Amino acid sequence: MRNINIKELAKSLNLSTSTVSRAFRDNSDISKETKDKILAAAKELNYQPNHYASNLREQRSKTIAVIVPELGNNFFSQAIHGIERIARDKGYHILIYATDDDHEKEASFIRHLHNGRADGIIMSASGEANDHNYLNELNQERLPLVFFDRVYEDIITPRVITNDYDSSFAATRHLIKQGCRRIAYLVINKNLSIGKTRMQGYLDALAKYNIPFDDHLIVDCTNSYQKNSVILKEMLSRLKPDGVFTSVERLAFATYYACGEMNLAIPEQVKVIGFSSLEIAPLLSPSLTTITQPATKIGIEAASLLFKMLEYPDQVDVNEKVVLDSKLIKRNSTALTAKTY
Image: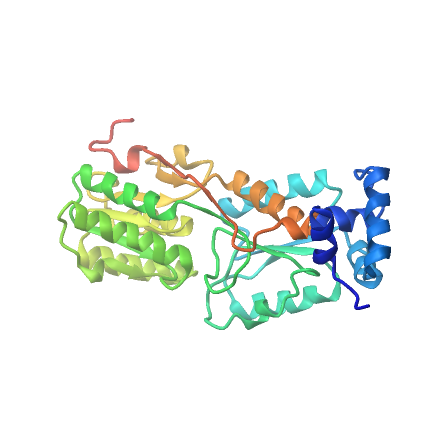
């Protein structure tokens, strides 16, 4: 008689594979009657549990790896806080790796984590390369992966994101309603998932309100404040936008600095809006209008998904996508006058 697998055994008993698996691990949440029924059926049907694989699953590091592009961004700090909250409740620690948006660093971290240092990975992608085979090499049963915020579209794994298209559309619409007609869109990586999605919201809002599109107003920036200062001052001088939409937090700071050095008044001459979870945004001068992502909630959801993959792998849909709403918070940087909202 051939050996059957766990799916066949579970089907014969009209039970889930996770229930059968927990019975063989002698989990306390399975009744004695159900355990006895499963063990008897396993013997009758010649099911041989893979104790080696089970042991590997049980020999856990009790550590989760969190890979982010940067630590200086308030969004990632808050997301890590949410991840850590869930990990702590589960008796886990977290290891934090910052890629500095460097693809080689990201790949190196992933390969390093194959040594059992962590039981799973929660990652926001660096997005610098098209080759993500190092992620495809992950064995999901041994090292589960959950994306948050910045994802690779060609890697099939659970993810937690926000409604970036709707948020970008709303941000651009807000600038238009505040009287802007030459709106610059600042982006660091147009090829990254969020870069493309947020840019599309910007483009569609321009089209919806019959604002002519000028591709020069889509400005490629970098992760360097010094380089961005040069790029933005040249853009402000040459293109003379009356509105600036920054797709990431650091570009809002860079815009404020550039406008200050050029004596351009915000919001009188240039209105500024940007994606940011900056807690001191209301205290800036002028206070910054933001699209604020629920960063802590994103971290909580991502960690919850990862622990679901660890604890109940048979119940996880690898295509699962959690989409949370961001909030447009209007402040003085987009005011019609310098008055407070």
